[in-house]
Image (tube, rainbow, N blue to C red):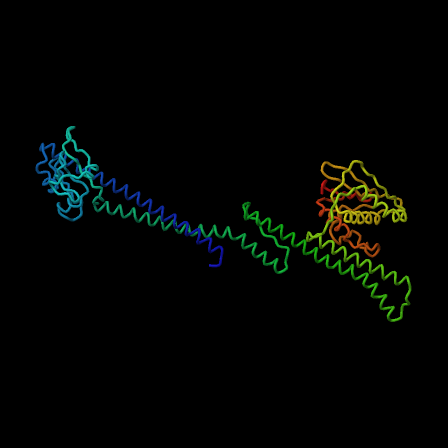
Length: 461
């Protein structure tokens, strides 16, 4: 029994069968009991009328037993046997009838149950007896021992039909329960089956899997979550493939340069010179930077990037950045300046990591700001955070590229690496370091006019 659908079908069916059996037995019991009560009351009423008429006509109970046994009535001349069609004699009918007669002193006149004529009615049976009145005067006691009444042939047939109807109704409900159980189990397990098939496809490498959302209940929410997970997996898988290709491409360029020069030097085709050694050294440094950047990203992804936090003045971070890049900015003809707001309290941060963030952002701004442009470093105090801005008057970022600037190896200009030695990991590293500090970073850009990066760091760290 490995199928969930089979298990659920059996669970629904067994639950339904238990309910049907209980209800069927309850309905049958109540119906039969009500029918027995009706027949008993009719028989007692008939018996009461006969013996009352006998007493009214004779003035005493003398001979009432023989009268009842004869099964005849002097009132109306109508015959009425007490055997009620059971095929026995009068005495046999009296032996099994559920009612009898006693005088007002409790002496049995017509036997009932285990009592014989002349016995005194016991107290428990007295509680079940009813007074018998003639012309308003109590003349006897009608005894009822609550036994099952005798049935006529027609009553037996009717009672049997009640049992048959209850049985067939139970069978019909069971069949209906089976059908409904199968439908319900299929409806519940169908989304699970679809997600299982989709999960197996994902396991096989086909990440782009979507399952239909058929309901708005928990299964529907599960299907929506599965679809979102599948999209994220597909996106992550494509990003991984692209990142692998980018890493291979970015590593191949400096390795090709180094390998080519070394081969030429070994073969004697190229002569050793300071320029060639300097070129190979720079390419080696580029490889080291890329490896270091990849290591930083792997640490941030794993949440293991170590931060050595202590109170840091934002002014010091900005001043250090201006001093470090003033020469490069002047060489390119770009004005680098700082606007600092007073009254900003220190933040809990790692100053070396913040310096790394500023280095990446300023290098990025210098790369795209033309001669005569400006790069402005700013800071401001918000309600519960400190904001640091790096704005430039460069060419800006195209709206189509703006959502992807923090993705690793993303380049709107595919020639950036070859031209500037940029790895495509800088902004991804910036985002990772800022988030490790509990902060956020956003970018706003007007294409053709400039770009602003805004870092928000929480007060107190």
